[in-house]
Length: 547
Image (cartoon, rainbow, N blue to C red; front, side):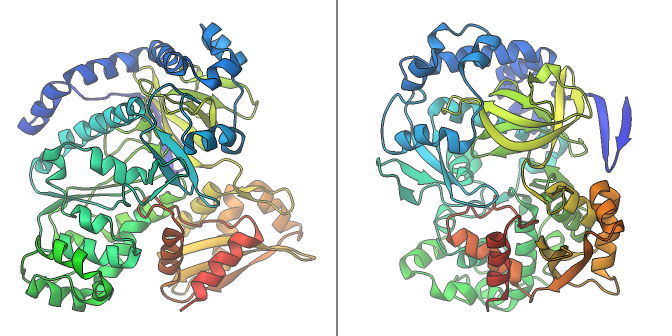
C-alpha cells in the first residue's frame, strides 16, 4: 500500500530483497554474510525480540559499572524496569559521566574497554567526545556490511573499480586521560577489511592532511585518472563543493596530472615529507577534456545523506548529475547507526533493531518502542548503546514513512529544538529546506535568521545566482505554504517581508573550512541552514564576508 504525504511516499510493504539469487559478486558477499543476513531478516519480522536481545546485551555490558550501581541495573529484567531505572538524558546531562570516561576512568558507563573517543560538533556548538568500545564497533560495522550488500546487489559494476570516500582523520588528538580522539568517518575507513581498503582511491596520507583545502585538492588529484565507480560521504554539499573545486583548480590539477605530481594549487604548501609519500603512489595521466564527475568517471552511485537539511543539496546534486543514482547512507552519527535503506528508491531507512536499543518520543512525551510506531508519525529518537549512551536523547526528529516486514522505515526530518521563533511561529530546519526545494533555485548555500525590531522579519543570506526570481518574495510564499503560523503572522503584519542578503562567491566554502579547522569532521559537516541566535548568524556573516 502506498500513499503520498508532501514530497514523500509512505510505503507499508517494503521488502529487503536480500535473497540468495543475484549476480556473482552479490552471491559471494551474501554467502560470507549469511549468518548476519538470516538474523537481520528474522529481526525485521520480530523487532520486539530483537530489541529484547539488545536490552540483555546492554545489561551485560553494564555489570560492575558505576552507572549500573547508581541506577540499580542489576535488578532490571524488563523494558518497563529499564525505563523506571534510567531517565532520558540529553548530552549535557550525561556529560559528567562522559567526562570521567574521557579522563581515563574505567567501568564508568560500560565494563568494556574504551578504545577511543569520537569528536563530533553536531549541528553547531562545542565538540562532543563520545566513547568507542569494541562491542559498539562490531554493531556499527555489521550495519555497514548489510547496507553495502544491498548496494552491491543493485549495482553489479561495483564489483570492480575504485571507491572515492571523503572522510576526516581517524585520530588527531588525545584526551586528558590519554585516549585517542578522532572522527567516526576516519574510524570506519580504517576498520574496513584490507581487500576493501585496497580499493580506496585516496590513500591514508591524504586523509591525514590537516588543512581542509589542501586535503580536498589532494583528494581530487588522487581520484583523477582512476576508475572511480562510487563516491561516498555523509553530506551532499561536500560533493557539490568538490564539483566546484574541479572547475576552480583544473589548471593546477592539469599540471599535476601531466607530471604525476602533487605540487600545484593548494598543494604547493604541503609538507615535503607528506608530499613525497603521496607522490610515490601517483602516476602521470592525461588531462580530461571535461571536468564533471559524470564525464571523469563511470559512476554507478553517489552515497550520502538525503534527508533533513541535506535534502536541498541532495536535490541540487541530482540536478547536477541527473544520470547517477543518489543513495541514502542511512541515519547514522558518531553515536551509532540507527537505520539504513536497502534500495535506491526507498523513501527512508529501516530501523537497525538488531543494533542499538531505540525508543521514540512524540508530542505527548511518552516513549514508545519500534513496534509501537505508526506510519505518518513524527517522533524524537532516544538510544541506548554498548558504548555507554544510556537513554540518550539524540534530539533527532524522524518521520515513519513505511514498514519493511514488521519494522518501521523512517526518514530524518531535522534536529528537534532547532527552529526560528520570534512570534510563536516555530519554523523548523526541515520547513526552511522544504520551502527552498519548492523554489527550484540552484544555490551554493543559504542560511535563514531573524532580524528583530518593532516588526521583526526573516533574513535569507545566500550564495549563488537566482536569475530573475525575487528570492525574498518567493521564499516568503513558499514558507507560508509549509508553516501556517508563519503565514498567519505575515498576513497580520506582525512579521515583515523577508530581507535577502547575497553573500560573496566562495562564502560557504570558507564557512565550511572554518568549521573544519575548529574540529568539525569534513564529510559529516552539516550545512548552516538556520541561525537560531545572534552568535550563529554573526559567524555566517563574518566568515562569509572574509576574503
